[in-house]
Length: 116
Image (cartoon, rainbow, N blue to C red; front, side):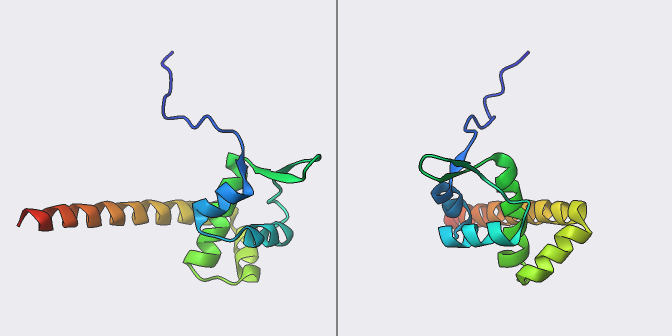
């Protein structure tokens, strides 16, 4: 069995790390937790630190895509997620891939412009 070196070894992320991943404020993440009941990060009881798992981050990625990227209101995002969970997940994944391809193409264009 081969060792997968690309696998992320970190199990939990702090609220600060997750906020930086998405360019959000920590208060926005805390608010989303109240609005989306399935977004429940683990908390350490001694100091109430939120710990987000990969599953939580995928939920945030979906919400971020609907609200910040596509411009949905929170109520519309909740309705869309509840009505068509799988479709919303797929759309978010496709959009993320397309944005990655766009970034790659822009980097390639800059390299080609530098050769002239």
